Image 1 (tube, helix red, strand yellow):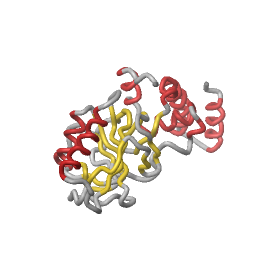
Image 2 (cartoon, rainbow, N blue to C red):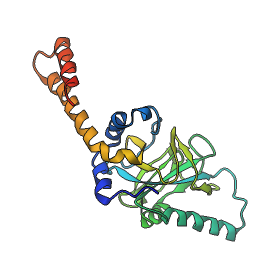
Image 3 (cartoon, rainbow, N blue to C red):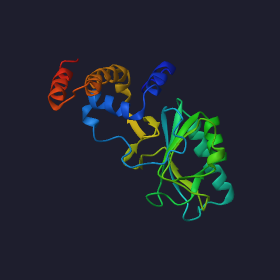
Amino acid sequence: MTEPLSEAEVEALRAFDTPTICNALEVVVPERRALGFTTETLICPFPQRQPVVGYARTSLYRAMEPARHHKEQARQARLDYYRYVASGPGPTIAIVQDVDSRLGFGCFWGEVNTAIHKGLGCLGLVTNGGVRDLDAIAPDFQVLCGKVTPSHAHGHTVGFGCEVDVFGMIVRSGDLVHADRHGAVVIPHDAVEKIPAAVDLLARRERVIIEASKQPGFSIERLRQAFKEQEDIH
């Protein structure tokens, strides 16, 4: 089993936004350049909240049709799901695929459920489904969702600990996920220690272009020169 990240490693990743993490992964694991991240626009009701980094707690959800469990079975199934959320290394992020439609149907996420998840060590949520109670979402709990909707409908979890697909991002239980207002990405565990150096390299290369573009008389010729200067930065 892979050792969980240290608190310092988690904080180092949180210092970057998700696009920067994606840029770094293009350098560190170039074979993942076109996979492992959300590919559609999600709603982020709290764009000012900081990036979150955590281990995926995956689940499947639906709300169009009632659950086929009796009341006691439904309660036990829900407790089993929460037990799964609380298990294993943390911090965690809930990654939820609503299977009813592309943007889901009902709503599992609001004041109560974000409070429960936060209390169990979960930092945020990425789902193609719905969220409600925006004024009462748990403090600092980051949210990326497919839509805002008012009703539970027949909402219930139909599976957890499984592989899910949220807007093109394939996630398995325990995957390391980075998310912010731009979207989310899965970070291969063995790439973590290489990311800060890759971010530094890319920042130094980008700085050449940005600084050149701010100078008086910036031209295509100067841009060509800046591109060449970039290639010399290692």
